[in-house]
Length: 556
Image (cartoon, rainbow, N blue to C red):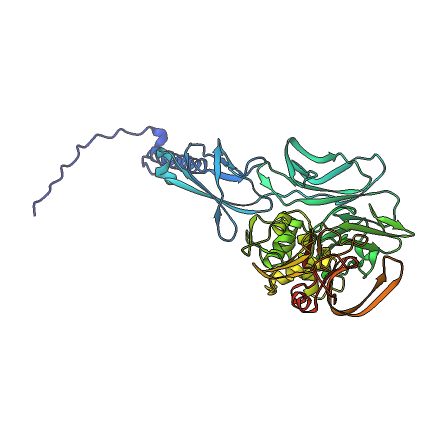
């Protein structure tokens, strides 16, 4: 190992201290310069630490809620750049599209009020700060979007007094439903706590939606106003006198609590309808029909007890009743269903309709698109000429009468009331098709002959006797309305005498007292009857099974 030698420093002669600095024992006291230097260094260190602390504090950004935007970013004193902004909502962290406008974060699309959001921002610090405070700063904010709320939902107004909506907090957006139900949204120039609405009726409801921020959306709420002076008043939605669907709920809103107005009872609904009254809130109940609801072509009524007034209802003594009408099904849909069930000589292919009462009733009112086609070959021209899609006529009436007869209706009239529509829809849902086929009877007045056509084939032709000149068989097309294997026929002869003929067989009445039937004559093939179409017993027995109720008899 090499040896290291140190040079001794040169000795500097010391000065003799002044007399005043000499100690008691004659020692010399040294100056305090070293202490001053150490103190100075300490001050420098403390100042540097303080400066570093100030830099660290000023290098921090902040993230906070904003009174207009979604949130606001406050950048650090030393500057920096926003590296990323992420906003998610809901338990599944669905992303929310946002944009930066200066230091504010704005949603690109409307988002729900009273929605919990998670906002994350990454700030990149400048290089001269990054060595001390770190390259990036992560900011996080949990934010519940604000929601507007009304101070009153049930208001009593004097005549001419405007409807004023009062909110607990100022709002920036108000939307009011139009007559069509569409909400017209309007962003206010400045936040307001009161909104005045124009009203034209003494009582009614208004559907509104309000938001505290311009980028929010919220479900609508209903405000109801009532005339002053009535102790218990109800508003109905839809309004009495309007047209509703078979499944339309009926809402009753009272100016007092439901319990005070009705007690524990609920208003009766007519016609008797499967459904239930539900309590929506302390002032509102809703009747929700089920299954087929009120039925097509029904007149619906709801009667309120004595002492409760229904706005727009019919007043009877001290009680009020509201009425609504349900449209009947269209002729076109009636024809579509009858064709599907085999009661018309046509088939129908169209858009699918779900096999539920609600879907079928909706289709009855607004029929699906589709096409009809003849089910059989060799369709008689007279029958083809009767067909008119969407137009009521004898062919449709006869088909409906056949359906009514097959399904046990006591009244077979070819009219589609609520019970008939319900039965038709049920038959379609259960695929209960007619297996009989289709019959068309043609009676020639000039040829005195009957031709029977059934499901594409001419089954038979036979000579007949039609009415004499004083009691002619009326021309036209008529559906069979009564079908009897044997009956007694009675009436008045042209000379005024009365006749009563028992045991008349194979009778199919089609126009008043005119019928297809058997009647024994010496000859057939010329007018002899009092309006009926007479046949020999054998041919009449062959015709009768093909002419049930609803069969068209064409006389020409």
